[in-house]
Length: 129
Image (cartoon, rainbow, N blue to C red; front, top):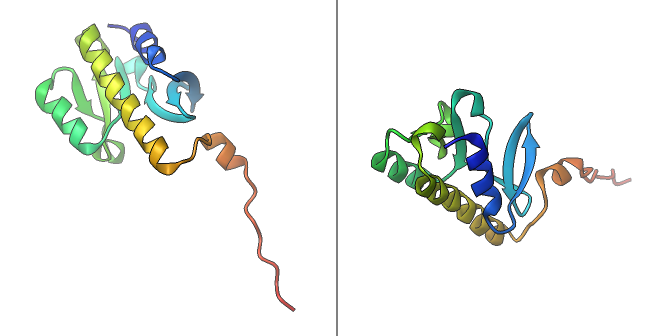
């Protein structure tokens, strides 16, 4: 599989949109990221999973999945080796990340994009006289 396959499958998921984060393609639902191609040059797509989901994917297919190095990986962010994945594996992994993001969006009750949040001006306190 290639980056274009990752993109095609990600965008086939309901409500998914492509955007950009730090110069790399990302895939969002409800304005929130569920997958990226930030490691495309290294041959990976990235999935935002739970730690438990990451462990299950890595345990089942260690030749396809590995935690992203450092703190991101310890939080569940996972590489999928594009060349080693087949259509079904990639589709299942992307759907898992998408579903997790949809569930988190529903729990938070917010559909606001991160960009919109950053643009908000914080309220300041007035001194009482």
